[in-house]
Length: 201
Image (cartoon, rainbow, N blue to C red; front, side, top):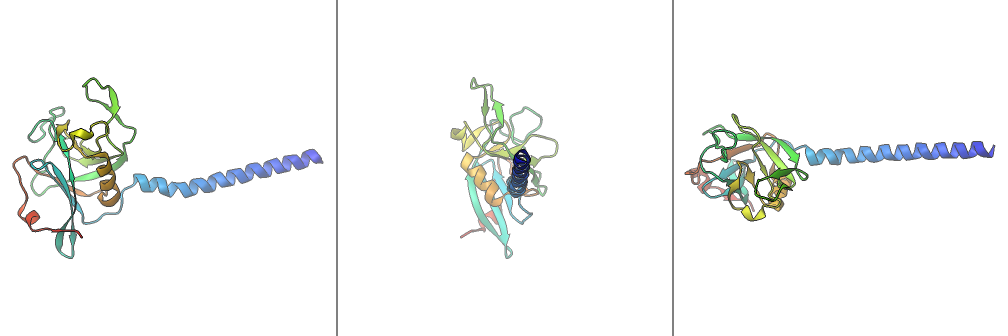
């Protein structure tokens, strides 16, 4: 009888532990999804200036275009529009056809070998905002782990590199899947409408 009671208690403990684990997983799932799935679509968009080495986030509020945030960026080592893989150029979006964010990926463990003697190192910050850039693949907006000093500047292989803290801010506060991203040509300054924008308060 004593053995039977011990067995019943043991089974009850196992069932309780399983139920707690299941409940814990159910609570954690939304958090995990929240970290990897982008926010809902909005009216905010990004403009990246090769000339000024900056990334600006704009939104349309009550019919007015408003500047929400500006970040310094590091762009490709070579100037000009990307033509082929490995040319070390950042692609430029055609007039009236912005690129867009297709995925927001956790890149905190991603590594890369720049062939500069440092080996295979962490290089992307916490987030990689993958872009749809017709004709080219692997282009995104990401952090600069182990390359912070390159921002602002010209040192990337084609991607848009932000400081690690800035990629977190961009992802957490502004970015979403489908977000339009305009990348200007080298000789393009501010658009006329950019000169008239209001800064967010």
